[in-house]
Length: 337
Image (cartoon, rainbow, N blue to C red; front, side, top):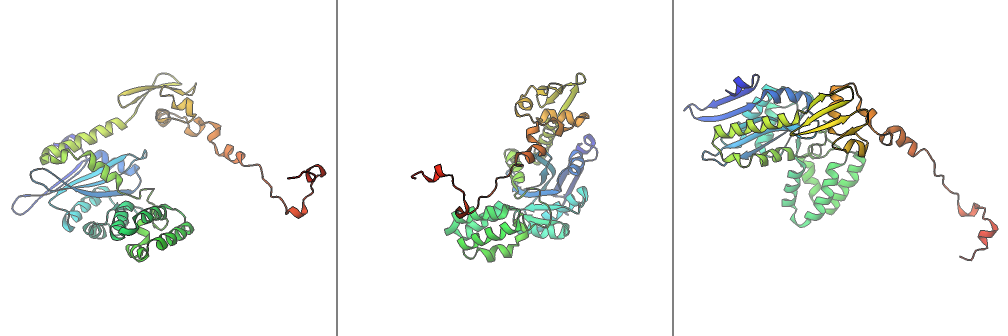
C-alpha cells in the first residue's frame, strides 16, 4: 500500500529460509528525489527497538539547505552486525546511487566500518567527533577537562597550520593521545585533514536527534512503527513546503506551517517583522524570492554588503617611529608627567 500511495518509493522485505522476518528497508520517493538537492553527506546510525519482538532500527539521514534533518532511509534488522549493516547500506546504495563526493559519517562501530568498506569503498568515511571524544575520555580518564578543551578545537579548525599548533598542545596536555588519534586516522576526525567536504557535519547529531523523535514509537509493533515513520515524514515534508500566494505585483501571502505572513516587497516589510528590523530577508521573503525574479542580495541592507565591509577598513592606521626620532612640541616636553 505504501508504494501504491507513494509511487517511486522503495520497500524491501526479506525473510529467512523459515519464512521469518529478517530485514525491512524503506525509502520514500520524496526522499529519493530530495537527496539530489542536499549536501552529499549521509549520517548513519542504529538504535534498539523496544517492542515485543525487539530488533534494531537503522537510519540514514542528511541535512537539507536549511540545516534541518532530512530522512533518507529506514531499516529494521535483528541486530547490529556486519550482515545487517551490509544489507541496509546495500539498499541505500541501490536507491540513492553513488556520488563521487559522498561522505558517510558514523560512530566507530566495527560492523559499520566493515559494511562501509564493502558497500561504499570509494566514499570517505568520517567519524563522529563526539563519539571519538567519548572514547578518549574513557581511555584517558585523568585528563578529561584538558582533553575535551583541546580536542574539540583541534578537530574543528579548518587551517592545517592551526591544526599542528593545536594538536601539539593537545598531545602535550594528554600524554599518549597522539599515538591513539594517529592510529584512528587524522583525516577521519578532523576538518582540516578530511579529503572530502564534510560541510560542517562533524557529528552524527542529526541521526541521534531523529532517534530521539522516534523514542516512543520504537515500542510499537513493526507495522504501527512503520506507519508512524510515514506520518512523521509526511508532516515534515508538508510543513517545510512553504506556499507563496501572490496578491499583486508587490504583495505576497506566505503560508508557513499553520501561520500566514504578509510580505510587501515595495515597502520591504514582512508581518514577522524580521525583514524590516534586521534589514535582511527573512524566511518568508526568501520563499517569495524563490518564486519571483527578486534577488535576495538586493534585499539586504548596504550595511551587510561586501562593499561596505571593504569601505569600513579602507582607512589606514600608520605605525609610529621610535621615540628617538619624535619631534615633541615644547609645551608637551615641559609637562611634568
